[in-house]
Length: 379
Image: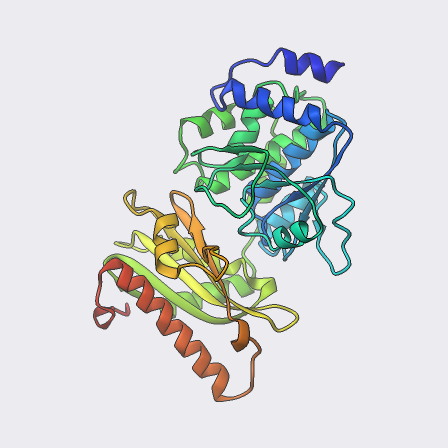
């Protein structure tokens, strides 16, 4: 009854159109009592984790049980701290996972393209119910409810839902404080410490500041880089080549556990003088020896669209799914190596890396209209 009264008295918000909050409330009301899976990307970031947590709290008010699931590894130091310090329960997919117990799937901070759960969910007959995201439109799923907004973070969208009354935050409620702190971290990290934040993101951060535990937020954000991350950054610096103010670096082979070092290295290369775009990539090896070419792009150039750039540079697979995509200032790409997966001793491994390294550089600089023979390796 209390939840229904809250929904009935939704107020206008600077961060989200009133109609979208009402539509979500009406949609969740129709699915009262169900069990939903919240599918986040394989290597979840703070935006996905915090937004998933917020969706779980909102759904709870409608008697909907949710489980946040990912298929990958959480390796970034801040992400580990985020989940542990704020006690956010995430379930890692493992073989034998029962998808059929879910009545529907919710895709948050992704549209089914950056999670390998999508195909498994479809095979199990789980319906695509909801997509809430801030990335460019994708077409891997067909949700019944969709809210894609061009804002700095998905956490901004969920903060708007909260402001609109889907959950009435209270400073004395520890769960609300944990959620607000997580959402604040999601917005800060997704907007490069608010440097890329828009009006909606600032409004959302202002609202969350009243409920955020500043001490916990500081602890989460001040995690030291691991030795492995520092090693990857060093390798990116040594291997980078620069052309047309774009820095491109291949870092070789990497364990799946260290995958998050790639975007951190891209962030670091972007700080170099006269560089407006940085791309770092490597071949990531899973525990089962499956290999993927994985890369991250970071840019401060307003006229460069990472989503368009990566989609055109790397194309799509046989099913029509793009290997890359992104948002206004960042993006990533993942290309399965398929038949060539599986490392062998000796020259084969080295030659395979050389081929993929050269191919990425050729595609990137070809897209830029630059001659790869003119690439400059900084001293």
